Length: 64
Image (cartoon, rainbow, N blue to C red; front, side, top):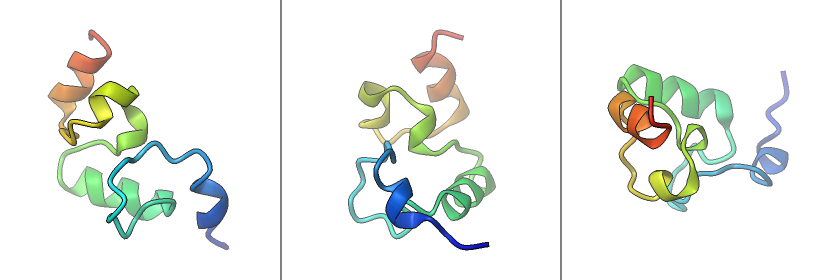
């Protein structure tokens, strides 16, 4: 399967510009799940900018 990294960058919500996984959604998801986190695209913009990708931060961000 061909990676659509350039196309994915059009809607990638991650603001960490130094991230080597930006736009490579499968790599990003695998990395964050291994660290018991969710990727930045799962968070609203104000919560994403905190770089707290924890499940608790996700629940707080969405009032769950």
